Length: 407
Image 1 (cartoon, rainbow, N blue to C red):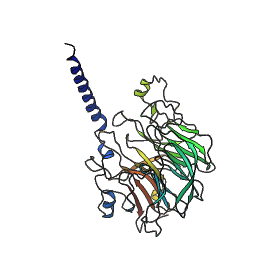
Image 2: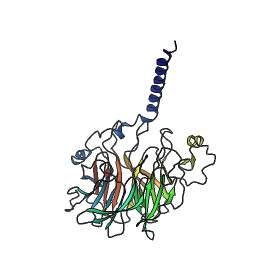
Image 3: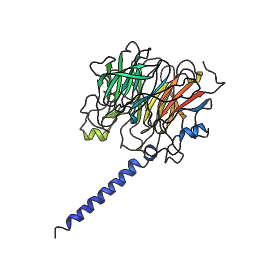
Image 4: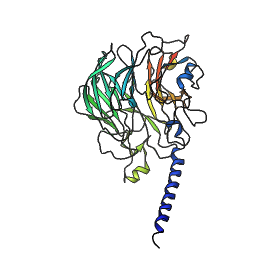
């Protein structure tokens, strides 16, 4: 008489599991399609045909600098102004020379390959002979030949966590007088937890020649991209908040990073708001008064990545004190958000004045698919903006159209 109970119990457990899966999907994954499914259209072809859904200010012209780069992420430039791009999913870094200066890359040159999810790129000094590459598990310095566009003779600078979540490591050399110090952003291994590896959920710092790896700032769940402000030289970073607190919590953040500051994760988010769910689970009884609040809160699950400031010269006056931020786009929001680039405007005191969409249209009108996802932004001082798109495999080029005044 007892044997029939076992199949019945299994059916009940399967039923409970199925109900839980449906509820979890409805609460967290209904908007996942644009992030994970193949691009709904060929973004490069649409731009070339001049009928793309991408919108941007009328004073610009949009072209394709290079396509055929699936998974392209970080953009940097060598001393000869040749673009280098990391492609983590392919384990390589490529160069995209534009030898004839026609606004299109001539070819794709493999700078180095066989790496472990290379992401962050940085050159040391103005000579550009030393290229630093952040892989998932280490940072190495390479001899870089700008004529051959080749990186050789790797020298390991630092060991990094090699497993767990958030595998993108980003690099930034500090401005003078600290230009020998290399910042390394390392995300958390989890959604919300106390890390066992001290190097996680931080921005680290190390000398350009190697040596002890130290904490520069902590409490940063996933500060993937960093930039130095052109006037104040402060380090700014985008920050992704945790998941599973609903569509609108917690906010993603933009932070001004100072040495030794703790920005609150996993206990606090935004303007020093206590994460009640995690705090209760970990018996955290203190408030967030000793943490550093966000500088700017942005829509939860926007997934902010690349950011850059407009230079003081080479641009119309209305771009003074402005910054662009790429919103890679949500995966766990009921109604998808992000998939755009936002312009932030500040006053002379550095206070936020306003913000608005600068470039959008990667997310389709029905919000069920996307033609791409913007990642990194590089604003040049001659009226040029480059944008990487890892979903479409494209580097876009925005240029000020003829007739628009530049300072």
